[in-house]
Length: 118
Ligand SMILES: [Zn+2]
Image (cartoon, rainbow, N blue to C red; front, side, top):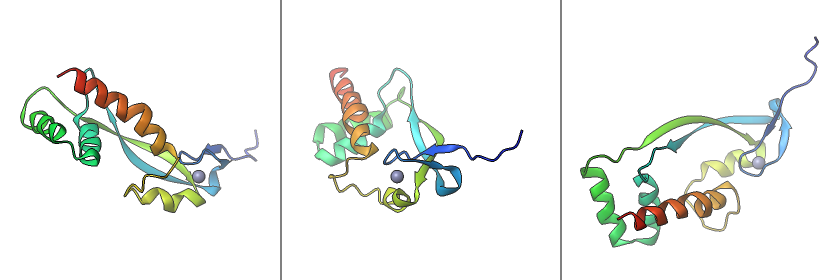
């Protein structure tokens, strides 16, 4: 079997699909967790909202027991265009990439669940 074709990779930032040599691989750390809410998400949102309650809960999460954060290294693919954008994780909120999605569909529900569970 001749391997004349490269695998196609999908850019995690914009979703474009290109053959592997045109894509760049990057390792990111994603949090994986169990039943307990992940306090790292609280850090992000709490610091964004400057919420005093988040900070209190954060202290609890750090100094208390039982809450653990699991991080897993994950390899993602980025197109040449997004490779540079992706580095700028400062957060100028008008980006409709994966971070927008992650924020509204992952972090916000986690924080809501986390707030309810108190
Ligand atoms: Zn891209």
